Image (cartoon, rainbow, N blue to C red; front, side):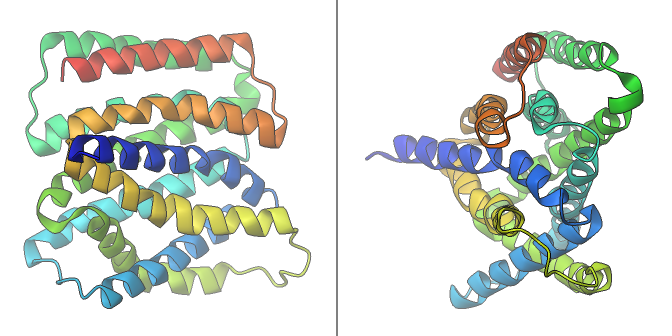
Length: 286
């Protein structure tokens, strides 16, 4: 197997793992407080990431890497999990996947701001079109029931896009899975005390599906998925392999429908397809 094929396989596995994050988070927040879920999943992943770094004798990041690692930590370790957990108290996992379609675009925009990319003018045409589709879809919904969730998801996408772009830039020198592992370790002194502080009085009534969901979002969504994802980006190129992320909304929609029994409206499906088309066009001209 050549290097390019291997990179695409790793990238696809990473996206497949990430696609289960929102459905699993929705299952978890039904029984865990969103704050506790955010803190404990980061603590579990941070402990596992730290163990990997020790066992594999990885070098410590340079002093200049600390600020980028902090941005990655705020974006993908703390910000995205917390905002999505809060959003999924107001909207369904299927609804939230419409916004996930904007994640590659957000990553590309922060690539311009943080990594010096200079996309062609056509990029911005697709960018504005995709954003308008999402905003238009949100306005057609019952704002009294979903506006809060929509705004939280938009915030999650923005901060995650920043974390992805910063992590992708840093992975060129520090290494792929090492970036997420060090970001998790960096957040551990804050996340672990907060997890203990926010722990519910009793965990005896938590159902097995909620525990499974917690394990998934802790180990797979926050650590193992990034092992495959960043390795794919490192070996196959950020721009090329990053386009695989466009498959995530469709995977998540299928999971939400099959595992959670959620309805997927025709309008939601059409918007997902249109947003993915716009993001694909934007990425082509990046």
